[in-house]
Amino acid sequence: MAILLRKPPAVRSDEITDPAVYRARRQFLRGGAAAALAGLLPRDLLAAAARLKFSKGPFSTDESKTSLKDVTRYNNFYEFSTDKSGPAKLAQDFKTRPWTVAVGGAAEKPTRFGIEDLLTRFDLEERVYRLRCVEAWSMVVPWIGFPLHKLLAAVAPTSQAKYVAFETLHDPEQMPGQRGGLFGSSLDWPYVEGLRMDEAMHPLTLLAVGLYGDVLPNQNGAPIRLVVPWKYGFKSIKSIVRISLVSQQPPTSWNLTAPGEYGFYANVNPKVPHPRWSQARERRIGEFRKRPTLPFNGYADEVAHLYRGMDLRKYF
Ligand SMILES: Nc1nc2c(c(=O)[nH]1)N[C@H]1C(S)=C(S)[C@@H](COP(=O)(O)O)O[C@H]1N2
Ligand SMILES: [Mo]
Image (tube, rainbow, N blue to C red; front, side):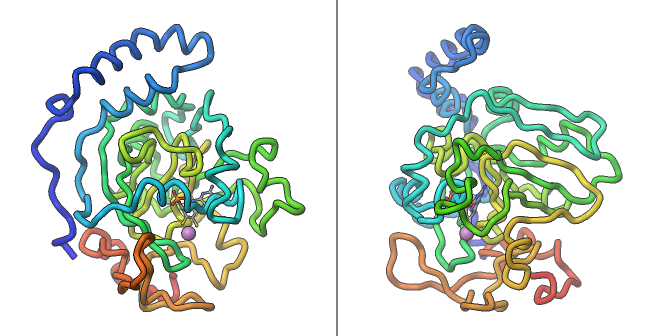
């Protein structure tokens, strides 16, 4: 499994920065304050700033990437639609500005971060991760983001912090899937997810703000979403507005809906079938043949130690 992972090249982001992008960023930084006062930020300049900022991060797979088209047109985002092709259309006008992420709970310095702050405060990295959906398909996505542990460190978790709870925006006016009735799904809103503290602090755990060199498309969870590559895709909660440090294991949307089918841990495990289908193999989107599913989605060398001594059939 380790052969699929490579170390980051020793190249600093400023050495690979295109001069045009550099200029755009300077312009962005100068225009930033005025634009922020006016309540708007030019999207292309923001994208240029995001593009500039990233360097190659660790843990990237060498496998071929899923096409941008498939990554952005084959989505699970039930707030917009339960149909895979629905979010790309229905999330087009989703407003991701202004946007804040409240990070608090068991923390000495609870903070409400503005999204522009989050885009510039931490060094952004590109990380090419596999994403394995519980529905037995997978993708390879070049995310841009920063490790969650950096954000958590900024709020200074207390000793009470044993788990981290995440919450997606609740806005039925913008999200047709949250209206119930014809467009509704079986999920309760807002979508919630959670991680154990050691999982949240693991260097693989990423808060993504972009993919394929640009800011996140709305249907992929703009403006900020979680990516936990060794777990089933539903743990990678989109369009986050709240992150809370808590002392008890928090509820999670899919577990609340069908506790026998979706556990809290949701580690990718070819040996534990979903009650209605096998998890032994998966189809990589864009391919026809099926490939074997790897324990922890191929990240076992990095994360298996977190679960040493745990019965992974019981804690599925
Ligand atoms: N808020 C929210 N987050 C979500 C979902 C969702 O419906 N709502 N779907 C999850 C599932 S099941 C998967 S597989 C991934 C899909 O992410 P992608 O569309 O970027 O591939 O998002 C996850 N995060
Ligand atoms: Mo999924």
